[in-house]
Image 1: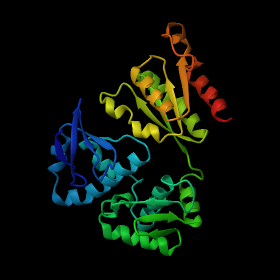
Image 2: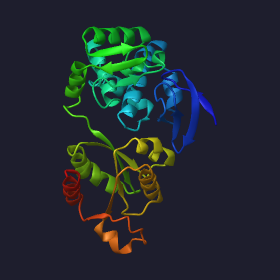
Image 3: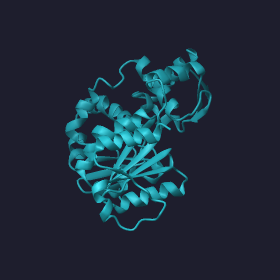
Image 4: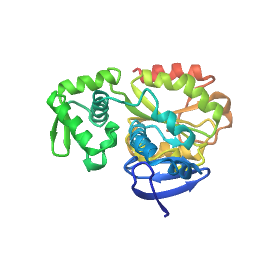
Length: 297
């Protein structure tokens, strides 16, 4: 496999090319994961001045890591990078950066006091959008001094106070991970995004959508992401093989699977195992109500 240096963290990592994108795999920006960069963007970004790189790259590295850690796929183009770096969502103060560290620990633990190991810490200062390790260590020491966390080497534990602070910044509750597998239909994706996904979140889940229309099939859904989910929803309206495969993998991991199908396709469906009994829907609004009822019990 070809290798290339990640612009944002300088690590030389495996590179895959698919369609219009280059996929950088398992760098410090995307530990255990990957992000994609539009062809031609690498040369454009690499041609920036040294000063621009020093300002932009730590922020972009942190943005990539945070988005992936939240379960979002990251696809970048050179034209978007400046607007990302200037977004009001990017933390600018030590307090805001400390809140990002608390939220990271919150996402990776189930209760206050549960240990979260960050190793190597030297490659993880992008968790706080910091430009260097020294600032990360300062932030950690400050959070410990404020009794928001306890550090033991590379192990970190949120205190009750820290857990409450992180929970408040996360909206007061911790959403359970949920994978949604959709077939190669852009209209279907838009319907779900508008009407169905907000209902799933209302039921306490954080839905991550994987669309079989993706040109990069490996990016369409990662098996480790499915394995970490608490629920999988598979829409088999158009019977995409990728959807059946992902759902089958989830069942093998003892993850609950809800099957859905648009009613108009029900009479034309292939013969399915008796275990697959899709929830039938006519409109996305109707499906949203059905899922709300099912997931609320």
